[in-house]
Amino acid sequence: MEYYVGILEGDDERWRVRITEVGDCVGNGGSPLEALNNAAVSLRQAMERNASAGIKIPLARSLREVLRSGEIAAAETVVLVPLLLDSGRTVRVNVTFDAGLLLAIDQEAARRGVSRSAFLASAARAKIEGTPSKA
View 1 (cartoon, rainbow, N blue to C red):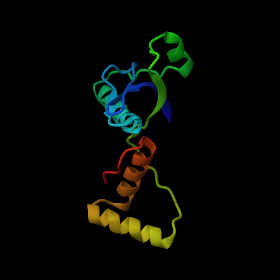
View 2 (cartoon, rainbow, N blue to C red; view 1 turned 60 degrees about the horizontal axis):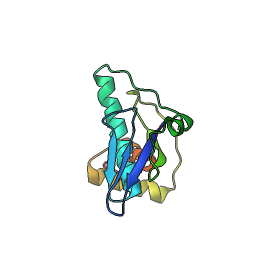
View 3 (cartoon, rainbow, N blue to C red; view 1 turned 30 degrees about the vertical axis):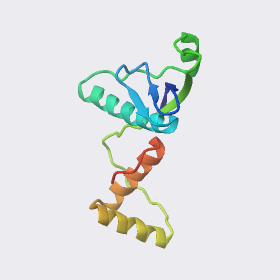
């Protein structure tokens, strides 16, 4: 997985993470964590839009490059934003769960109207990006 350097800024109530390599990539939130989580989702969506439009995905700059660039103000902080892109190819895996947990997973997946695989993929993506699971 690749990480992009984000620049975090804000105050008590409003926070923002911007990723300068991707011009339209910003995450906002009521806390630094919420802004970072929203930046991860925004980054994935921006990269998916770029890929579908045939636009080359910009390379992530290193932390050293961003720090040396002079674009970080005194009140700002750098954060690492994960980029989690689907490859469009599924892979079968064998995993082991406690029987009670697997039953709970299957019940929740059925309640939401999705497959076990879709539920687990959504949960994993949410955990990596730090966002609430939607499936």
